Image 1 (tube, rainbow, N blue to C red):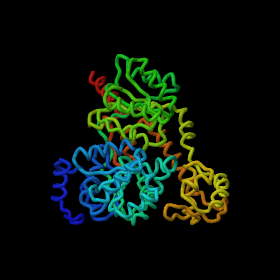
Image 2 (image 1 turned 45 degrees about the vertical axis):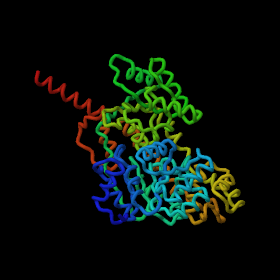
Image 3 (image 1 turned 90 degrees about the horizontal axis):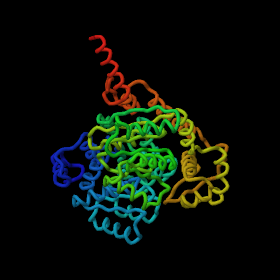
Image 4 (image 1 turned 180 degrees about the vertical axis):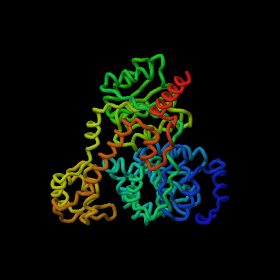
Length: 493
């Protein structure tokens, strides 16, 4: 069977024989056909819609290697273990392996034993790795969790912004980007960042009818604590089962876990300042059901596939609806009812704007970086970063800006910068991006303060048609329905 000539019956045969499934979910077959025919693709499929199956099945039919770029080791490991259980050969190369282990994985790929490779985006910055991939011949490059390009690429994962260059260096294989949440603007940015060629865009809908959305407005932390106590331990407590409470800071995550333990609830904090062994311990305890609640920064969740999470609470307002819906969507993956609660303090909007403003490239930073960059002239990204004196996020934005103005070029994993006048470097696009990020926080404020249907607000933001209220899945519509029932009862009486 050839990749381009696969019929529906052929694809179903592979689906049944290798994955034990009887039918494709919406969007899956179209995406598989798209990449088998050599077309780039961008897919927005809701959580639980089977994004990973698309490239895992396609990899069995393509002539060359399928490389999957995954942002987190935990997320990568879950998928690898699932494939191994099915008896499908798969390789993974990550920072936790020794050189010997990585070399063994490459040998498996070279022998043709494995057709599927998982890596993090930073791996593409390694010249020897890129040379090996070129020798092996890549048929499909998959960017999983593609919203990370926009969410993280400008800040602490600048390697995401270099994936388009990596694709070029690999001879421009077919590229497929996958995510569960992306507004129309994020879709356009993802297509631009990856330089997708006339991509097929598949959006199957992000609505999760089993999720109930609610907002609790409070004025200070004392009231915040009271709301949590009412939800968990009062006689009419509404939260059952296991859940995640997201906090903006490590201090808040630790304090929230301490409150819950005071109330007799098994809870642990999870954040980036902990040792890796502690984070793994908390994660395992949560997955095994030994810990009911994890209080966490946004470092927790993307690699966690726990289907029976019954609630997700945000103690602090996220920077965007994309971030909020992505995190809230970790509830109810088993399709059973789950609650998503935002605790909203209007006074926190300023703090959220400040925390989100850490990624603005200024004219002064361009001036400060110039001597070091021109002094070195050419070097690896790490060497040029050190020479610039900038943080990783600002350096990534400067590289992007200089490259767009034709003042910086890339070749074989190295950067070369030309003479430039800092006052002539265009920062218009940077200003537009910052304005957009401010508008995203404003949309988050609108969600928290709206008196209309919250589900409809979310769906409209993501470019989808919202059902007429009451939706039956948010606090505002529940109040509307309750008021309607009360009026009807009084009229009848």
